[in-house]
Length: 288
Image (cartoon, rainbow, N blue to C red; front, side, top):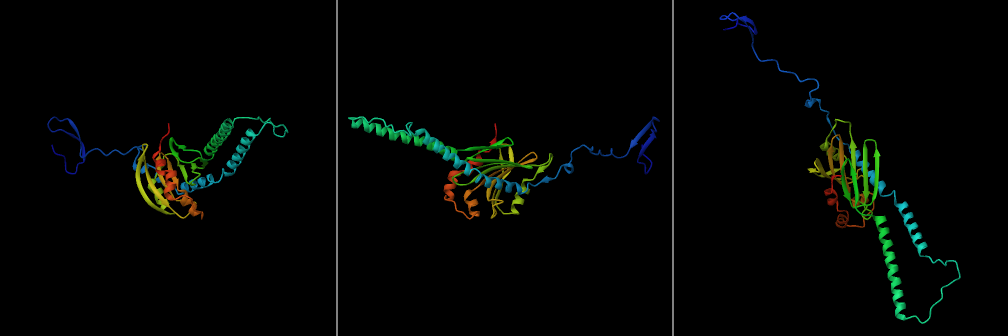
């Protein structure tokens, strides 16, 4: 059976059985995506975390290096006074003196003196350890957004400001800073990690940049150098957690002191040994 010239289809009678036949030339029209169907065009554009996240982190760390000095010095003086009070004689202010025994053995006297010296040294050593731990501390855990790191520092500070949150700790010996900075964006926004690196290049020099994967997150590790204390030189690792950017930062104390016109008393090798920044970054994991 042939259709008349120019026909696009229609209903015709079969010449054999005389039954009506509906014939359509061409396939069905393609279906259009429903308005609720997700397409690449419907996704929100990626957002670049600005360098303000780094600047706020640097500000928090600078305050952490200064904020607690006076309070800790007062605490140390109070501890020293309490120790002196505990060791003062109960006869203070009295003219009474205990009687002196005659004929005591020189060996016994020597033992008592030695025992007193050793006991005194032990007490001082014990107080020294307590003061050292109180003043210098040990490794400190920093956590945010369900992830944590361990830093070789003790002076800790936290701040929340708008869409940015920071936890920081300083090593009192080297004056180096360890930080976690989180910036939150509206729900559904994609975080452009490469855009963050490009923003850093606008205010300084990114000398290293490479993709990394840690604790189930994809990120970028980079090294940043600058001559500005507002965006201090540091090593960083930035990750995307949903609509949030998480930055783990290490700010070397010698480089930051240099920006302030000061010099670190530690060489770079000594500083790295005390700070152990690679161990700091390697400790990044999910918090329990």
